[in-house]
Image (cartoon, rainbow, N blue to C red; front, top):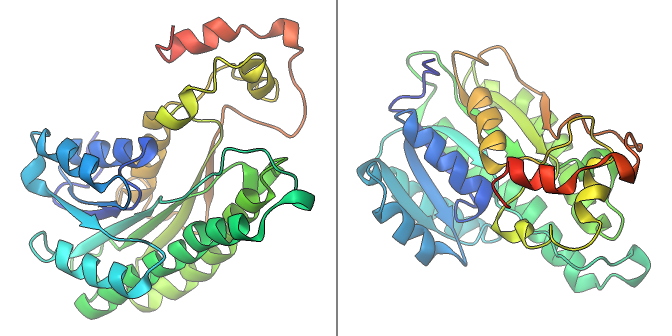
Length: 282
């Protein structure tokens, strides 16, 4: 199915990570031109892009999303050879792995999470909107599109990670505000969120072998499986598509196997090896 993304230029922040890289690859398969943003992992991102058959349709943006001015300047430079920027996937974020209750949380960790996950999303969105304003609305009427990578932590909370949960909750207020502002710049502009649950990336896969982790995660999900980055990318592309989602704005798509805030399966009913097999981990 043609999603109407061919030759559209899309920024993907945090493209050196599992979800971001999958989104970038999926966009390229649809014929899009992709600006791949990276910070600490930017060297590996450049090496990965050099290996892709679509590398001529890609560009790397090296910037810290916490630095508003550098991010905006870098985005202008990176998009210059690719053309008008049509889409923005606000995906860059951090998740400190240590389980720490709020009563013991270090202020520096809270600030770090908020700086990247909240302020970084603000600066990325602002830089994108400024380019939309300068270059005008899409002449074809397809509309600019922003998609935020949220988290089920925003809906259910996450014990030991209140900083992360709060940062992802903030995206809902940002999205609901910007959806009403973007149309002043592009009458058909759209803004949405994709909200992943537990997704197996290079960072999280190593935790699956810890006793009881898989059982704990899938007990709240009717679908006894974990998401692959490609599952999240599929939802992101659907929302970016001017054909599939042209009348969808201000919405959240949760990609988490039907997760609820209650236990649906007893531990004895969970097959952890089966969950891993579906992702090719065993």
